[in-house]
Length: 289
Image: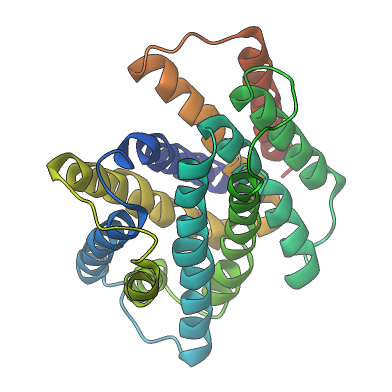
């Protein structure tokens, strides 16, 4: 695996941190379903433009297309909805703690389904990132209170993101699918899947969207989902999924930095410890390539 793959994965993590940071304020102006639909419509339009300009739209076969569809269903539709529902039902730090188990599930899925070697460095890096994420977003020790539904959604998000971002994405690229083609099918699946689940869920999730909500969705789509997936797929073309999965966990590190710079939050000792652990995990991946 090249150092470039690690750098690209770090870029993806930074971009995804934008979407994670915007999710909480966005839900004050838009319901989850409308937010998801608009977000992925924008990504689909950007992916189409990117594919046309780069010449990256090509038919690679039905199997890679099926894998891209599977990734879209698991990651964008189910994972995205669960993340937003968790944000509505429990605190942001609990949601991000549980969804940040993504690197662990990504490493496990890569070993089980991609037959990649079970390197100690990958599992150690994943453990450091997950542990660091815990300290980054958990302000103080203590048991979780309230309904278990929110935390359950958060944990399910981590599992779905970890599997979708490694197994189907890597298999599709290895089968000859270009990143632009994958992203277009992925985003189109997200749009269609969101529209399909909207009708039966509307009785529980009323429609809401104002101008601020639309701007949050567009910003999250362009600066988060689209850019993040372009960089992540480029990284997967150059490296093993099991070694790149822990790097994905640095999303929490970037989200932490954004909260300090733009939300004027003051880091605690626990947060600084978490940032150090995440950095150690990413560094371990870089030097163990």
